[in-house]
Each structure stands twice: as C-alpha cells, then as structure tokens.
Image 1 (cartoon, rainbow, N blue to C red):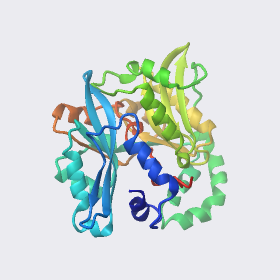
Image 2 (image 1 turned 90 degrees about the vertical axis):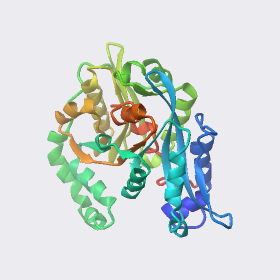
Image 3 (image 1 turned 135 degrees about the horizontal axis):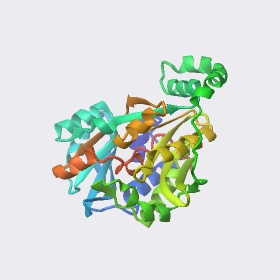
Image 4 (image 1 turned 135 degrees about the vertical axis):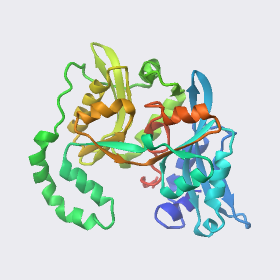
Length: 349
C-alpha cells in the first residue's frame, strides 16, 4: 500500500519512506476502533500484485442514543493500468456495500463524487461550504497562490510586499478581544468526555468518543507537523465550560479548525477566543467548515464563504443519511480523514 501510494500520489518513486507503511498500519489497522468487519480493501492484479486500495477509517457514532458504525472512506488509489479495469469504482462499490451503517468522505474530488453518486451516494452541499477569516490578508492570499502551480511564481515575486500590505490592513483585520472570559485552558480528554453531551446542541447524531480513542486521535493529529501546531483550548466563563476548539495554528500560514464545540448561546464567545488565539499565534488567517449555527456569528465577524471540499454520504438507512446531512457540528473535520498527513508528511523516520 505504501509503495503504491508513494508512486501514485506522492513523489512518483517506487520506494516509500520508512514511516509511511507504519502510518497506514496505525491509522487503518491497529487504532482503538479498528473493526475486522470493516476493513480497508485492496485490488489485486491477476499476477497477485497489489494495484489499488481504499482506506476504511472506522468511527463509532450514536443516533438517538443507539450505537451505529461509520466508515470514512479515505485514500482511494489505483495504479494507471488498473484504472482501465475500473479498479477504483470496484473498490468504492465494495466498500459502500459493507456492513457499516453509514459511509462518508470529507475531501472528495469531482471524479470520486461522480462514482459515489452512481453508487447511490449523495453530495451534502450544505456541509461542503468553508468559511475563512483573514488576519494578514496579503500573506493569506500569497500562501493560497503558492499552492497553485501557475500562480506560484507571482506569489514568490510579491512575497517581499506582504508585510507592508498587511501592516496597512491589520487595523481592520485584527479581531476584537474576547471579553468576559476566563483564561483559556488546554482541553483534556477527560474534559471533552465530561462535557460532550452539553455541546451536542440537541443533535440526534454524535460521535461516541472514549478515552483510548481520544488518546490515539490527538496523538496522531499532533504528529502531523506539516499542518502546524495543534491547539486544543477549552473556553470558560466564571469557571463554566462554554465550549472548545481544536485547530492547527501555523504562524504565517492559514490555520485550520478541526472542531468547534459550544454550549447553547455560547457560539460567539468560543469564536472570539479562537480568533484571538489564532491572531496571537501569528496565523495569516483561519478556515473551517460552515455549520448552520455559525452562519450569523461568522457574518458579523467579516468572514468569507466559499465552496470547499465535498462532503459525501451513503447509507441504506434514511434516518442516518439525513442525520449526517443535517447534523450541524456532530461530525467535524476531526472525525474523518481531513487532518491526516499521508500526503504531506515526510515519514523519513
């Protein structure tokens, strides 16, 4: 799997770095919620060579208090020769036909979305919208251009101008202070488990976190150094927990919000503390996934909206499918494969 992924999606070479196979093992095979009934799948050629695979990231959820199993369809890879035989479509078809209650993916390409639709799945448009708040607009725009091949030269040439342009804009871009709040605390696993029910916001669907899974999850998320430092903060007022955020906040780059959990009527307090934290960390901006409860608070904070990564859902249970599509903050970027570093980390050790 590692060699195939290296050749198709990373360097194009035939030898994977030493840590990539171990990474796939930890995130697909041996993590605390791994389920032998819900395995990742491989595609073998007639001569026995592995020419394709699809990752199955298993998560435990609850719908109306009852247990259910979710698979996040992750890496879908096939060698060029195998594509002519429809290996990718076969792998996706067999994964969706598994015994899980619901399947999602939260970073699909248009090609995958087309296959998904043909197999009875659907794009959740409302959950595919991203929001952005710019703190250092010139740097944020430049960093986005650096990811695009054709525009990279323009971004490189304009880089010396970014500090001057941002200095002129920082007065308007600076977020207001988070008034009336206690000093934020580092979010512990115990704190998350204790207050998860309060933050569900009446959603029928929630992730059934437990201690071993959170220990594994935050350990793996923290190890994705290419995304920047992982920050976990609990927001409080007079000792009461109002919510928390989990985010990557890289200095000089655009930060990414993985989870934003809030008690009822506390959304604005948690957002304000998050923005202050990101500003103080030196982030050029902040991006996250739009949820219905965030729309008005984000609008009042000069945030931008755009169509982001496609969120797809497939289930034979209509109640589950509808719960995922309208689940508010119940399923976040933290609960799928969005944060994973298989395509960004060097894995040299």
